[in-house]
Amino acid sequence: MGAVAMSRIGGGLGWQPGLFEVRAVSGRVTDILGLGDAVFPALLAALAARFDAREEKGAAAQELGEDGTSPPPYYMGASLAGFAAGCSVCEFAPGIDTSGLPALLFLVPGMLLAVFGLALARGELADLWEFDPANKPELPE
Image 1 (tube, one colour):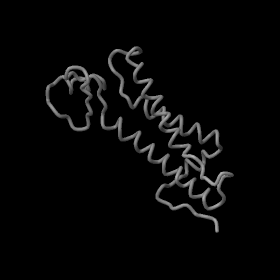
Image 2 (tube, rainbow, N blue to C red):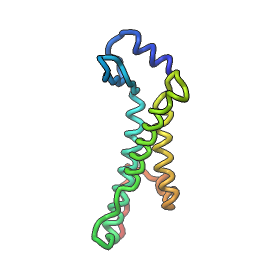
Image 3 (tube, rainbow, N blue to C red):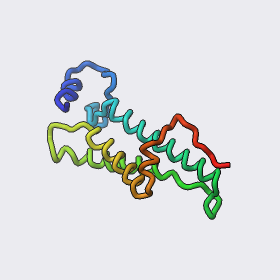
Image 4 (cartoon, helix red, strand yellow):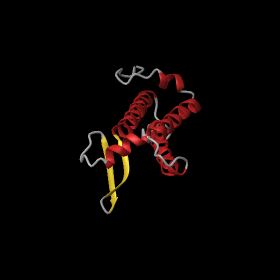
């Protein structure tokens, strides 16, 4: 995969659909992200945000915390922390393998581990696994 990405860059074909290039040093390509490197993490972060919104609505309908606020967005924060950890690993990955590794190899697993690890620690893994963002939460009366 790395060879395919590098051949697309070095070919001088100009703009490439689905390829984000960062040219930071004298017009030279310094970093490359494929479309999937941005889309899949965004989908997972959106799912985490929707799950947090469901949790906030449920907490608001039942009872608020002692200070009158709803719970913080735990899962969105966990997904962003997993993304940051995956980005950090991407920076050190060239020391492991010089041929270039796809960012999805680190970004999505880092996010999944953070989100599912938090759900497991909070005892909400089954709720997260069965969560359907299309369904509106049933609020108690």
